[in-house]
Image (cartoon, rainbow over all chains, first blue to last red; front, side):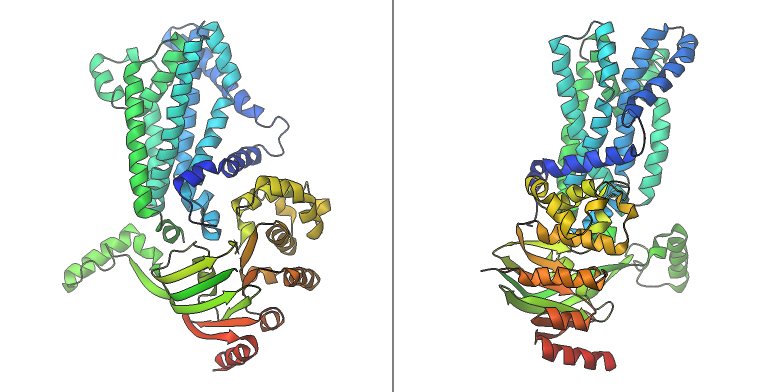
Length: 261
Length: 256
C-alpha cells in the first residue's frame, strides 16, 4: 500500500462509493421503507409548510411548494455537507486514519457522494416540478449537469477544508453549526428575495454564497433559464476552494494523524 | 525477493495536554506568566504541544519467510513502530524500505466496521478499506466466512459478534484474500480463543513467500511463531536477532 495521491483517491471509486452507500444504508437500517423515507419525509414536511406559508406570502400552494422544494433540498444538501464535514476526520473516519494509510480525500469524496445521492433521491419530485413548470428540455438538463458538477467539486473541496480546520481547532465544530442555523434565516429558502429592499438584497443576499447555489438551481428548475451571475460566482468560488484545499493538503497531510490522536 | 529494511528510524510524537486547550487554562497561564514575569511567554499558550521520541534509531532488515516478533513493555513503541512501517505515522528521520510485495497493516481493523451493518456488507467495506480489489472479495467471500466459521452469521449485524468472532472475521479477511505478502499484525490477534489461534497461526505458517511482523506481549506465541525478535524499551531498540536469545534478554528486562 503506497502513499496515495489525490488522483489515486479519485480513481479509487469502489472504495468511496462503498463508504457512501454504507453510510446511507446504515442510516435507514431496520426500517421498512428504507431510503424512501428521505423523499417522503422532506415532501410531507414541505407540503405542510407550503400549506401555511403560501397563505402568509399570498402565493398559490403549488407555486410556493415548487419554490420551497427547489430551495430546501439544495439547502439541506449543503448544510449536511458542511455540518457533517466538521467532524469528518475527528470522529466519522478517525478509526480509518489510525488503522491504514488512506488519502483523506477518499473520505471527503465519499462524504460528498453520500449527500449527493441523498439529494438525487429527491429527483422524482423534482422531475414532477420540472414537467409542471414546462422546463424539461435538453438545455435545462445541460445546465443541471454543469451545476451538479460544480456542486460536487466544491462539496469535496469544502469538506476537506472544514474537516482539517475543525480537526485542528475543535471549537470550530460548534461555531459552524451555530453559524449554519443563523445562515438559514438570512438565506432565501422559505422566503423570497423580493420581500427585501434593494439595499438589504445588496448587503445581505448578494454576499451570501449559499444563496447563489440555491438561486442558480432555482432559476433552472422554476424558470428554465440560467442566472449567469450566480453561475460565475459558483464557478469562481469552486476554483478558489479547490486551490485552498490543495494548498492545505500539501501542508497538513502528514499532520492529520497527529491531530486525530 | 521481498524485504523490509529499517534504517535509523526516529519518530517524534506530539503529546497534548488536553486541559491546556481550555480557554480558562490559557487565561490562567497568561496571568501566571504576567505576574511571574516569565521569559518564556509561549509556554502553555501558543506552544501547547510537546513531543516525545517514541522511536529512536531503530534498525533491522528481514527477508523472505521471516517472522519477526516485536516485544516490549507497555508504551515501549511496538504499535507505533507498526504504524510507522505501515505509513500511518510519518517518521522524522531514517528510512523504511519495503520491496517486492504490498503490505497490509492489521492493527484494529474491526474498529473501521459499521456495527449496525451485516457481516456480509462489512466484509466488502473493510476489505476495500484495507486495499483489496472488489472482484477478489466477491469470488472469495464464502471462503472467508467458512474459514472464520461465521457462515451462519452472514446476515447478522456486526454488533452481535463477540470480540473473538470479530478476531476470526478480521483474520480471515486479512489472510484469505490474495495480493498482500507483508503483514504487520498488532497484538489484538491474540484475543481469539486458543483453538482458532492455533488454526490461524498454522495457516499463516504454511504461507510461503511472505513476511510477518507480529507485535505481542506473549512470549509463548513469539517463541512458537517467530524466527526473529526485536525488543523495544521506551522507544529504544534493545535487541534484534535470534528469538531464543532475545526472549532471555526480554525476561531479564522484565525482572530488572
